[in-house]
Length: 387
Image (cartoon, rainbow, N blue to C red; front, side, top):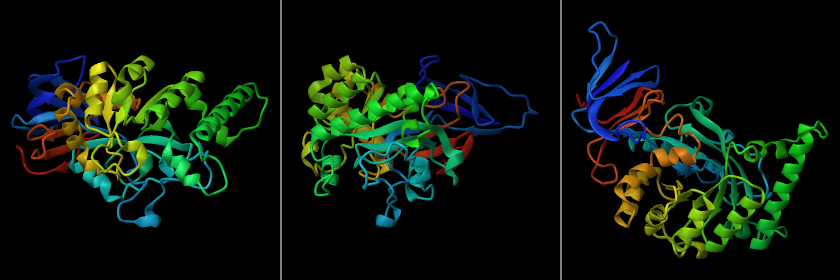
């Protein structure tokens, strides 16, 4: 067992007090008890750590990135993010390409990031399946928190640019939408026939089963207003769940996004406006959406901006209008809900995974240090002795 004492706990839980001084008891990788004071018998086999009133909160969560699938400083040899030879590839699985030896995993742990939603890029209309994984370990199979966690789809410039000059679709936004509709129609028809034993198994279309069962969402790469509306239109046509990833012009249509009911994963804002569709990227987007009533998380889109900059990106969003409370939620419980793993992570409460970060200040402030990162009850990073 592990007992954290004298902790300034920010639980991010609706079930218990959000901010209080107390203790956290961990056993077998799970949070066993959270209380103002926990007394254990002298005979208990337990490591006790006096946190010395530092901030203890749920491990941070990156809701959209390409860590380990686009490796740092590896060039083409380490880039497995986009299968740029066919625009519709739902059967691709991120877990077959994530290299846990990528240095970004260690950077994430040192930043207090304990989980990340990782998957294919946006070169294809349909890119494949994402996975939520823990950030410390060697074998990807042992790190999986949820797989599949989403089906990547993409609108706008990236598919257009990738297939321009290849004498194949898509080269227009019309083609992107048309190809996605055709794929969804064919997938739905296959699943209906398959359930009635009227057709043979097809891995390509079988990959859509959890999407149509509403077990996972479409993960829509959208920047521009028109692309956001097209994504919403198609998701409604097929009655599917969806997340609006990047949502760069979401601040221009906040009320419509709230009415549609889809959550937004905003960012990366800590980067250049290097293409036409991101000309309106701004740190104010997250705040405008959250203040209008949307559920919001923040993404670094690593390696577009570095994974360890996640709390800084949230802090900059707070500086530009996101409330402090929504900032904390954006990188914890909101991200967990959006990724479909809030039953396991995102808050400190009994029964959840013991994924915890200890900071010597507000993690959104640049001078704050991560003192300790705990994943599944194991201390995987410790900056200094805080007893």
